[in-house]
Amino acid sequence: MITWMQRHKKWLIITIWISTIAFVGAGFVGWGQYSYGDKAGAVAKVGNVEISMGELQKGYSNLYSQYAQMFQGNFDKEKAKQFGLQKQALNQLIQQALLLNLAKSYDLKVSDEELIAKLKTQTYFFKDGVFDKEIYKQVLSQNRLNTKEYEETLRKDILIQKMFKLLPVEASENEKNILKTLVSISDKIQYDLLELKVDSSEDMVRKYWEAHKNQFLTDKSYEVAYIVQEQLKNEYDDNKISEYYQENKTHFKAEDGKILPLKEAKDKVIKELNTKATKDKALRTYIAFKKDRLDNNIKIKHDKISKSNNKFDNKTLTKISKLSITSPFAKPILIDDVYYTFKLVKVIPATPKSFEEAKEEATPLFVKEARDGTIAQLLTQPVKKFKGTLTPFITTKDADKLTLLTKEEADEFLQKLFTSKQKSAYIPLANGKVVMYNILEQKLLTNKDESNHTEMITKIKMDLFNSGLMKKLQNKYQTEIFIQGL
Image (cartoon, rainbow, N blue to C red; front, top):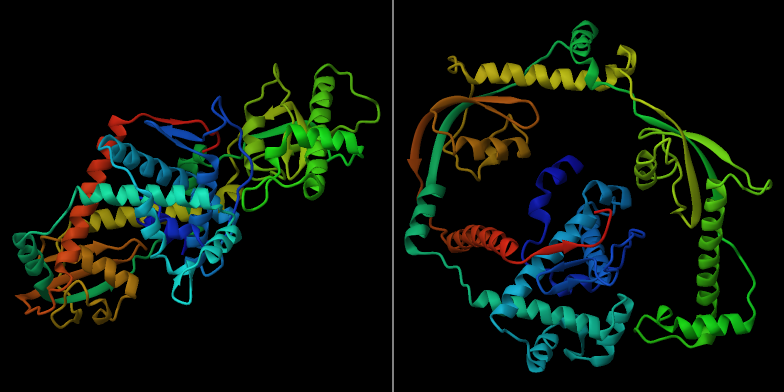
């Protein structure tokens, strides 16, 4: 499932705009903290449109919920990293920002009346069949949104929809007739499934490994010394708490966006004070570590980490990999509320693995290369006479009539069959199997169901139009990304 999703993920991304409705009821999923460049107030700027961290977090949460639903709940943050959800969310917002720049260049605006009219069509804010203001506030609050944020997002959505009404894409009669002909073509074929066998004995794999030794290396590893700084739990008097609260009120807000009174914010104030004190202490310890002036009671730990043996995280490994013996210290790194200060002691370079170490990795690569070579050779040869399975007249929609293939294999085969110019040929499938076929007859079927022809053509033309439009806008409006780590 993951492999299929990764192969097709570009079709899962919303390529035109982020629908406001998707935020509602999606829940909220964060991914941790990132460091910023100079413009900490925005994660990116496209033309004259800035993208905020809040928008990026909501976009990520929306995507996370979509994938979790597709995986029926079997989805976590590790899989989210595999699919690059953070980058997908940012790309969606960049595309939205490009369109907003274009809309603004047309001097398009959204009136309060248009906004209210849109709100009154959204049934998840209804009570007894009509829009209810209290339900509206309650639903937004449950989804960590306030009315200002939601209405701003909704305005953007309406603005983009207004712009697209100025750029209509329609299907012509000629295009409908061409599609009608294409989907009416049917073939009666004879086919058979070849499962190519590869000799993957140890001797064959060993020969492959010997010829590709430099591809199978141990991980580069790093010997490090490090200090751990746990979160402090200091006591603070009421004056200190009140003073910090007054200076940083905007840090302490309720879900509706209003600033919490000190009495309700007190625990959060103490937590933030402790977080700040912990970071300050970690930085002082880092300086002492660099100057070799550590207190005797501070314990220095040692470890060896690599890509395959990393008890920290990938971000930490990346930072350590950029250290050198002449500049061995890394500033404190926050991992799960604990600060770690690292010193690089030694770099252990990658070395070729022994055959036993590399065998598990080398075997599937050898099998794939051998199979690909056999298929490449096979495709240069004409199809030999064979007795295969006969089909009735089939179209691209008749995967269920290809009984030798699974549904996924049949769909892939039919797409390739009806774009092939050869009467007889071999068609390789993504899973390594090969189908050989011979077309016996062709005819045009009478297709009375033309209801979706217009929709199909419009979608194809819209996809092409959108792709071209995005390229044009990317060249017209400069995109600056301030967030690091994406």
